[in-house]
Length: 238
Image (cartoon, rainbow, N blue to C red; front, side, top):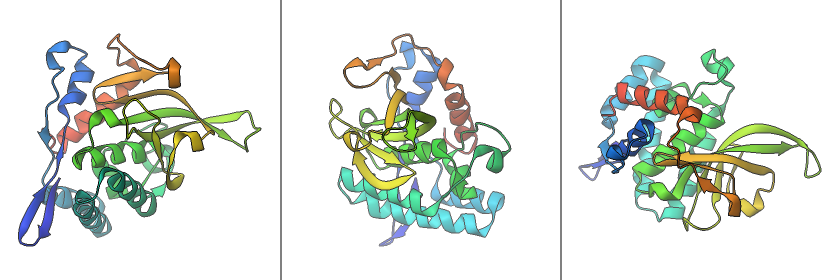
């Protein structure tokens, strides 16, 4: 994202959406990863204020300051800072109450503008923020899980979404969860059972040794992702 002023210079962040388009098209012809400039900070601020009011404008300013500070951190520092920022600044709310729909994926602008969202919105916005900060795509996956509730002996689960960060792409991920601000390795989250995960370049099913990349190119599970990218583009992502 284009940043605010610091030391007389404007800092620029970039969000890559080309890979998302490659996934959505499902064709090898678009397999190359393309870095596409995100809307300028001023445009984000203007849109937030016009749609949602002055409080949303302040949220965008706070977010911009966080992004500038995080840009100087190492990768794990960025992970922790982004996770903490959104967990502390945005309230949790169900889609039906916020958007009048049972399952709506908000764009980062909508999420920050409203200042409220569900687990999908937290995970998606964190993903794009970290991509903007230069965290490689292969280290990030938006992950659907079954979350066990009621204690370690409970067999009651509910659908949940988190963001997984792989410090080593072949290793154990760290979990960014809107319910817990501490970033923990997956081994310390036995309450979460992965179902499938995805990023802008592909989709994986299963977990651990049984995990495999979906080679079919199918995006049937990701229709809301297609809609999300289209709405982000309408907000200025080209």
